[in-house]
Length: 313
Ligand code: UDP
Ligand code: MG
Image 1 (cartoon, rainbow, N blue to C red):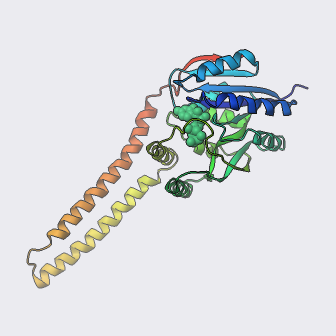
Image 2 (image 1 turned 45 degrees about the horizontal axis):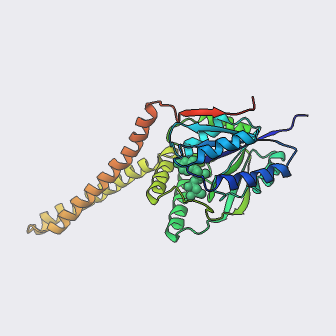
């Protein structure tokens, strides 16, 4: 019987410091599981350091290695899509290049896969050494997103997971250019199973995410999965209008019965500022969605590749 092929997809952007360590760890893992065929698919996401030449030299020494070289830096979300497009496995494991995701977990993931689970994801017990505010904000974000979508949004789950071929085929069909892959994993459904693990701090190099990039990703998450913010804008508009009518009636009554010595500059200015702010927020929300429509309407390819190399046919 042919053994099953497991693809390990590794998106890498400026990871010269950790690639060899990752490869060593994966090699150990592959040797401990000789019943499977293996493919390690590196996605070089336009790295500016020696990442590509390290991948090329690994490709020359190990037949199991394949790589896609993207034409520039497209970001991890698109690099992952390239991984789904080019992997050949009966299942695929997404893993970060920086060794924050422990490769030994893949063994347990494979076990669950053999039991019939189609999406085995690693859930962080603890978010590691992250700033307090970042932790709080990301919890808030997950809770809000979860409440406003129809499907369950998994909290504290990253991209480290094993996906059955079925899931890969499903994800390949979701070709939106602004991607929030964590949400897509939840959206596709299929039989899911979690594994708990302690996420370590980055061993080499630096995180690629700044606060603003994370905030951007959060907005991305909302606008690609729910139109609740639009409804929110409508509700605020209605509430404000209702309050305004009550206030108008009250003012008319006041004028009719007591007369009105012109007063109320403070009230006037605060009402004007408040309404102005609400309008700007609503326009901003609209803008986010229109921006997405604009980007998707262009129908550009999600990423471009410079090169793809693999020995397996
Ligand atoms: N990555 C990528 N393209 C990018 C940024 C990151 O392919 O533009 C890869 C990176 O090499 C790593 C993974 O995505 O393998 C996770 O990146 P990082 O460790 O910076 O994110 P974090 O662990 O902080 O979420
Ligand atoms: Mg990392």
